[in-house]
Length: 368
Image (cartoon, rainbow, N blue to C red; front, side, top):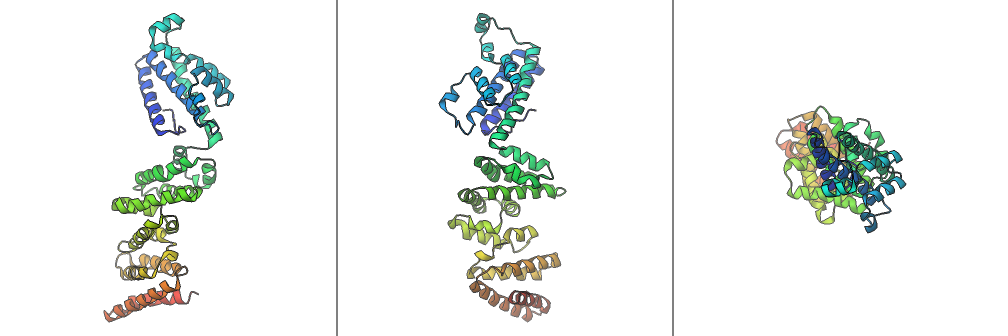
């Protein structure tokens, strides 16, 4: 099926895809007139969409009033279509006349045939290709085109700055808020294809970096909204796939503590490496009131009987690294909490884990 992924307006894109499918069914049924009317409508829509989407146009009323013939001439002038394609448009230029038998007779136009219908249908592919190329040169890829490339190409990461070059802000936002989260939900179960999920994560981070600060806040607040209203599965997926602790800086102030508390809670029972990755960079946002949960998470990971060594190693390295960015007040509160945890473990006869907490504290105090 012809791809209309460069069409910016989602409603128009869906309508064109629906009409294209219906046109194909008409061709299969040898309903040449119906197929040619639909083909003409699709061609005109594609040309008009190109014209009103030009950065210099902005949907000017004069453009919207162009008739089909003038739209063909304007697209040829803009080099959106070739002269050959413009000439072929003559086959569908008067498609509206086909709807009115009396007008068809009065103007002496020939009825559609299998041959003329074949040209009309093929014309859609030509225009889609030519206009799509022109749009990419003029305004960059669409959100759908970027996503399709990332999903299909294992080496797309090396091209990311080129893929996003010239992409409109509205399309970057559509990627960040709609398409990438949907794609992550679709592909997260593909345990045999971690690379694809990784590419979606990298794309999200690149898209976020390409957005201005106000838009970054809008995207970050999407996660805050999810934390407040979403399911555990949705929240875990987004946090592990997309959100990173430094994004707290862009979250609206009224949501920042809530999101920080969520990141800290995710470091508790059942912590995974993806949760630690999401929380990396949280140190500079920690306050003395966070010291208790911070140390409790460390102790919980240390005494864990499930995957003991990996969890201990991850949490130990993470906690030590983050203490390089915490405030002196927080560090002292955390040390006091560690001392109490060490005493409690020793009282309970758990000298091994008490020593592990002590060694973590010592490494923070003497970081070399």
